Length: 114
View 1 (cartoon, one colour):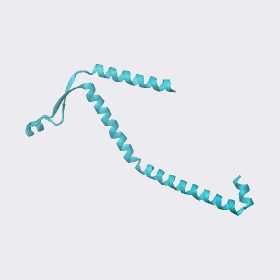
View 2: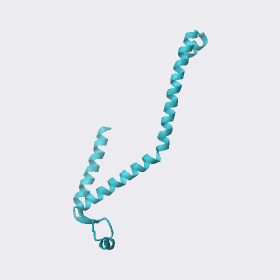
View 3: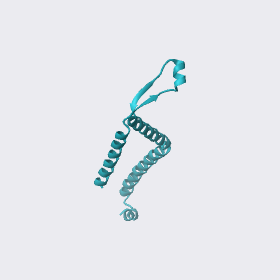
View 4: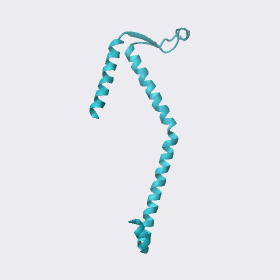
């Protein structure tokens, strides 16, 4: 299974390297439209290789997706914590009842527990 995982990540790395080599040209990334930047007198432009723009876009998309799923699954996580507390409470109660019934020496309950 490890070799399949390593082979998968090797293929992903190879694809990313090929994308980077194929898109080395510089592109201008503008933070706002040209007319708006002329009106304000500021032009926050950067020249970056295209592969960096692609990889940053993918990374930002993944982060937004992970955050969205984390917020969406909040109810399930809360419910899971409540159920875990309930199970732990019931386990403690069961252990206390076992100790209590063992002290009474009830033979029928002792047979059912074994």
